[in-house]
Length: 71
Image 1 (cartoon, rainbow, N blue to C red):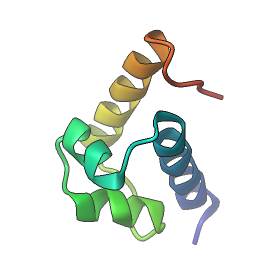
Image 2 (tube, rainbow, N blue to C red; image 1 turned 90 degrees about the horizontal axis):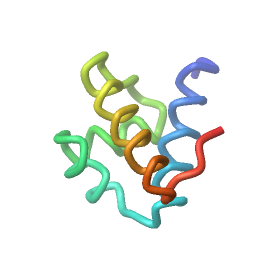
Image 3 (cartoon, rainbow, N blue to C red; image 1 turned 180 degrees about the vertical axis):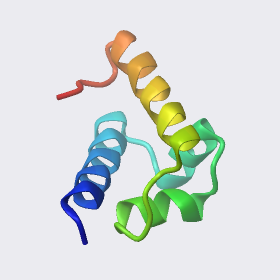
Image 4 (cartoon, rainbow, N blue to C red; image 1 turned 60 degrees about the horizontal axis):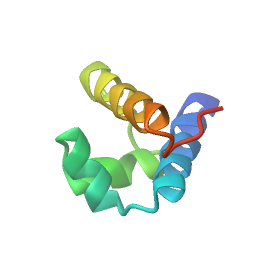
């Protein structure tokens, strides 16, 4: 496992914990499958460019609403 996959893994888990949402809820918000979010968190795959953009936009929106604290 690379450090990049570890950072995505940690980031996705952190976002979910801060928002108190399930993998399924995050998947629904991003328009991806539950299996996809699970694979990200397990470090099996990296988000595609589109999925990463969706994740970044979702996080920015949640941070703007004061629901998420980004590092």
